[in-house]
Length: 92
View 1 (cartoon, rainbow, N blue to C red):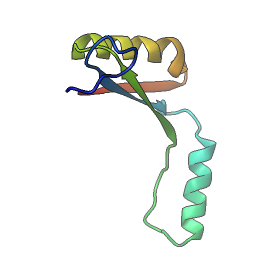
View 2: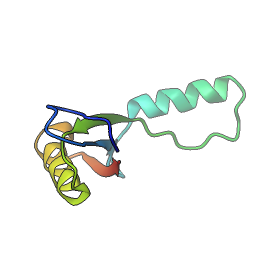
View 3: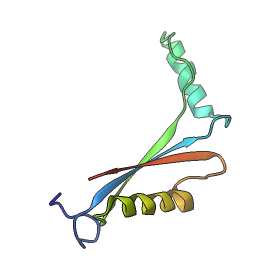
């Protein structure tokens, strides 16, 4: 990848962190969306869960180090690990 990202130290990657409520945690926003979809006659809709996706550009060429850094960011700030889980994906 020739595009420079982040602080310009070199080639970078994009970390995509997806944060979702853990199973068993009430999701009132998801429940409201499911209710609205049923009201719009989308009868096939079951459970709906709402989460967030965070894209972070990292000035890191090594995918393993980028993944480790993004996981640390998620644990320390991006996810409330008491009630939320997360997964990290790295794109070159």
